[in-house]
Image 1 (cartoon, rainbow over the protein chains, first blue to last red):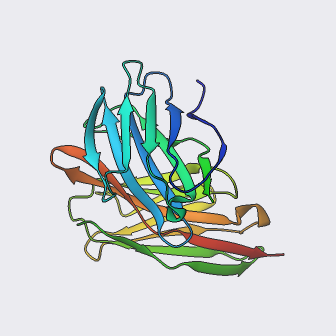
Image 2 (image 1 turned 180 degrees about the vertical axis):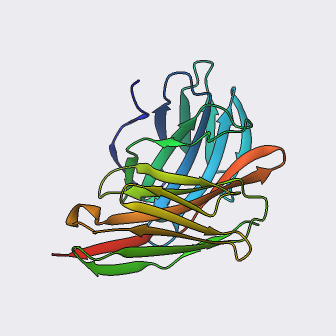
Image 3 (image 1 turned 90 degrees about the vertical axis):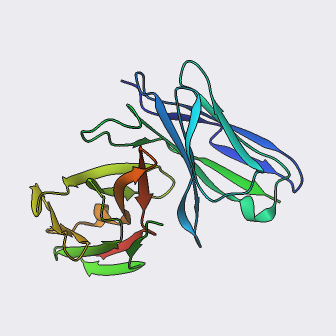
Length: 116
Length: 113
């Protein structure tokens, strides 16, 4: 199976702009989670989508939003970019959001966003 | 809320054993995971342990879980330069009926040749 893919891999934007990141999960996985990784804050959970619905949400401002499509692909949008939004944005997929078993997350390579 | 803590940095000599520690607060944790992140890459699952186990061994990796103290450790035997990376501990608990995974801050392992 192909792994989790994220596009683009690198992005440079300026303050005030908006950005959309894309994530394609592993085939058959219906849950997609997004994380922000920065040197100072570590790995911070943004949100999780399952069957096109947001299931969990982290503690981020409303400028951060996402959605999931019927084919489980997900997009994340950040509006009115700030310098502090510079980070590696990681997407992870897993089979479901509620079942038992290992149900481990598989991560994509990330999108490196730089805000100037 | 749930919290997972790790030391930020560990330096070992090649051939020695590395022990990376993690503490968590969520008593409803079911699975605990160790992920490895190499520079410029995403996170790769190394191993996991179910919460009713005390120990799990997988080749050079040994995971120890003290559920009473909510303490998890990862031991890497015969550490190699290729083991240099950031290691994340993560715990899976329940949040409003749905599973939620909380990650630690990551421990940067430096292996000195």
